[in-house]
Length: 99
Image 1 (spheres, rainbow, N blue to C red):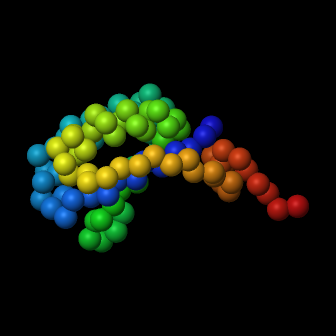
Image 2 (image 1 turned 60 degrees about the vertical axis):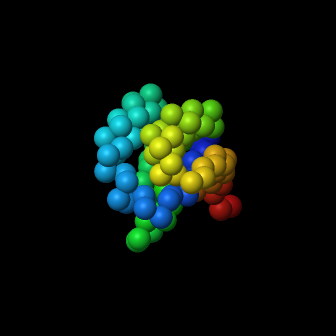
């Protein structure tokens, strides 16, 4: 299984504005989990400055971002999907163990 990180850069007023959109955002995220496309997601930092979501498919990550109300309503100022070459852990896509 491949891994892809969807990284959100958040607007400075993200915490105040997310209240009205959070239920729709979480519904979209849990639908992606149920399809097996989204593995984990959440905010990073204190105070929150970015968010990361771990997907199993790059196209699913892009479609998610394009339809996420956090993106469409401007709470996300920039987003980007990047491959993550995982090498350690039970779920690593390309496990590498020491000799």
